[in-house]
Amino acid sequence: MSITAERLGTLLCGVGESPIWRRADKAFYWTDIPGKTLWRWTPETGAFAHWALPQMAGCMAMRGDGWLLAMEDGLYACDALREGEACLPRQLAAVAHNAPGMRFNDGRCDRQGRFLAGTMVMDMGLAWPAGALYRHDARGTSVLLDDLIVPNGLAFSPDGRTMYLSDSHPSRATVWAFDYDTDAGMPSHRRVFIPALPAGRPDGAAVDAAGCYWICGNDAGKVYRYTPDGRLDRTLDVPAAKVAMCAFGGAGMDTLFVTSIRPANAAPGALDGAVFALHPGVQGLEETASAG
Image 1 (cartoon, rainbow, N blue to C red):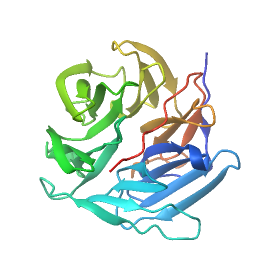
Image 2: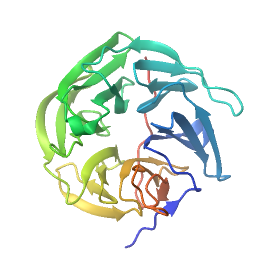
Image 3: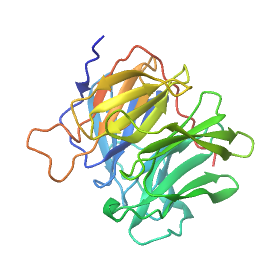
Image 4: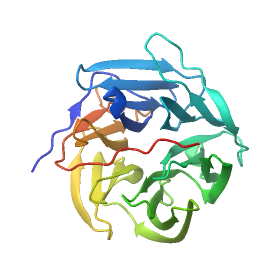
């Protein structure tokens, strides 16, 4: 069965990332990293809204009625966003990066509300494994994993006991699974979950209600669905090669929202950088809000 990807509006993001469905607002939110912008789309009205940010935000999570933003030099809290009002983040935790020219990239909360987010060197051509995966909760901020180039694809199984993580740099392009201690918030027993995608590099991901892992195939214009035992069982086409991250939402949690990246050499008329909605016939899981 063919699934049509509906383009939302006419906007084009430099790097569209971290889409989140907020049920209370009946809206999707996401960030354009180089555009230093937080976006919102409300399906009921088709309306878009956006807020300027003082730094690039690689990922975010709900926090109370506001947001937790992983930005260039640390983690920030932002109050509830209202149209016409500025987003004025305040720092929760500073991060001492392992190299110059780094920022946060992909991240989300585990099922208990701990915020996990990875860092990367912005110049991917350097291929520096200076990235790390951080955990932030009420106890503070600490490093869980290091030796990462471009951490991506972070997601958790429905019971929270399996953590997924990829490194989307072309030299690695692998997705791992970990056992995840839900009491301690610690991953262990790292193993290869997807050694390589059929086409493209692993980017952002989501998990559905059946525990299947949906991963964007960057450079391939695909979103792949893998069963918990690592079997590829579905492939969706998106009319943009550089798909970045996907998330479930909508009233029935059955809309798959997909962001993408617009490279500097994008051809005129190319849809890279656009955002899309698909209806694959399955339900997703709501994101857990930050408890820290």
